[in-house]
Length: 404
Image 1 (tube, rainbow, N blue to C red):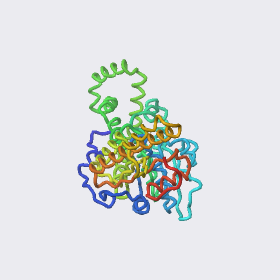
Image 2 (spheres, rainbow, N blue to C red):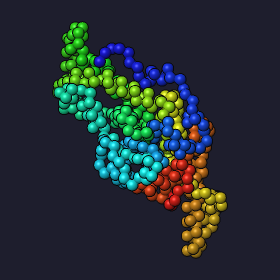
Image 3 (cartoon, rainbow, N blue to C red):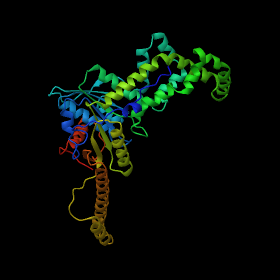
Image 4 (cartoon, helix red, strand yellow):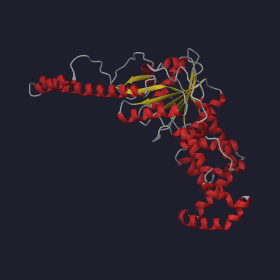
């Protein structure tokens, strides 16, 4: 590691002029089929807060694109077990595998994989270090902890894996399901966070006694080391120093690949799809994502509002339903049953009204962002037919099957 100034994603964005384009500012309805049919679309990144259906949306987009003739790889992050099984992913696997039962009449194909964070980290070390140095790093207790649980490692490795998949040129479309982070755009910050850890003052201090003029600081460093030994324990500090010394030669490669992948995310062939649920917190997060993507000059395709409850009823309103339900509640058994149905109807109407207000509020704040609403299904998606139904809904095609 050196003391040279680094080019980081955050420092680069100030020099990057915003780009126009058909997918960044058209407003109106998000045309999913046009996005997937466009051969210049090479990467689709689905981002959003946890629990809004990101993984299902990514899988549905990937399947739809494959059955429209694209050669697709979908990178999933911890999908629901039944969804994983429906795609042939019966166990965690860091290698793309063909998905069976995909309609390939148009010449398309679909491969799917689940990110194995630690295995991806191990592969990077093995690829870019000598066998002896790689084994030294892989066996280091500090590395084991860093590669398994350090905040931001999963996000960084998702970007690392995306870069690897893109570099092979095996697929003409890669669909990425971003990790379920507290801040759903952590994957944009992960390279900088990991860089800060590995290039920070504390790490440099650990290396300082072995490097040139820094030896003059050995006496002072001995005092610091003694204090750290009491806090961390001598073995922990030794593990960290050994790891840093071994990893030092690899760090520049990590930083360079992070820069390359970040530039790839800004490229014209990339499209970000923000996924949200029609809930206040999720829609607030969606607004933040849109603003953040704009600030980073990332090409935004649009917003998917998932699991929308759409009655489509133009008859009795909420107040009328509640009033009629109250009058019938003390009547006959049939009247009481009707009263309960009217109350259910009134509750659904309130939900519809609330969701409509949230969507209108988002539209008013971001009028240039194309949006599509996906109706809630009656049950969980756990097979390819379910993914096809979600794909139809994303594309605005009336889907068969019950809706809830």
